[in-house]
Image 1 (cartoon, one colour):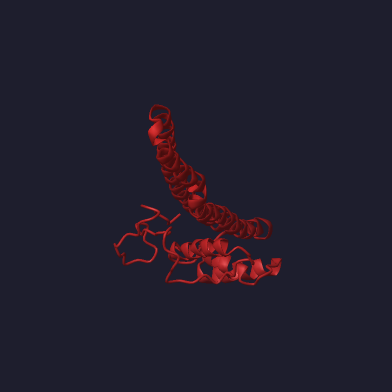
Image 2 (cartoon, rainbow, N blue to C red):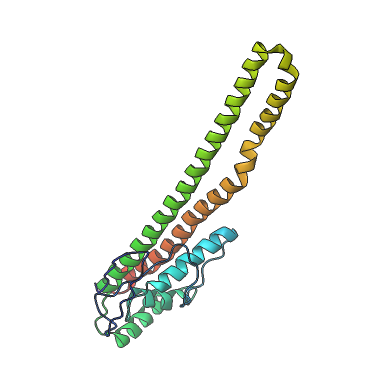
Length: 225
C-alpha cells in the first residue's frame, strides 16, 4: 500500500510534491471533532447525543486520513452515499473507480478497507485509555477523601472516650463529617456519569463505523470479482 503512518495523532508538516508519495503522514485527531473535509456518508440515526458527537469525530477522522488518489475510502463514500447500496451500485462504483485509477483492483480495495478499519480501532483504543485514566483519577480522589474523612471520624470518636468534657463539640464535628462522607459519592456522580456515557458512546461509535465499513467490504467480496 502507499500508506505510511508515522504517528496516528501527529500530522507531519512536511509537504511532498507528489500526491502519491509514500512518505506522506496522516492524522486522526482524537480531541478535535472538526475537519476541513466533510464526509458524504450520512450516519444511521442514533438517539444518544453523546454517540452522535463521538461518531462525528470518527467520521471526520476518516476524512482527515483519506489518502491521496482514489482508494477504498472514495469507493466507500460513493457506495454508502446511496443510502441502500445494491449490486448495481457496487458495479457502477467499481467501473467509475477503474476510470479514475486503472490500478484499482478488488484486492487493493479490500486491503485499503482493512487499513481504515485498523485506524478506527486504534482511535477507539485511545479513547478507552483516556476515559479509563480519568475514571481511575476520580476513584483515587474519592478514596483519599473518604479515607481522610473516615480517619477524622475515628479520631473524633476516640477523643470522645478520652475527653468527656469535649463530647458535645466532638459529636457535632463527627456528625458534620459523616454528612460530608455520605455525599462524597453524589458529588462525583455527574463526572463519573459523563465519562461512562462517553466511553459507551465511544464503543457504539466504533461499532457503527466498523459495521458501515465492513458492509462495503463484504459487498466488494460478494460482488466484485
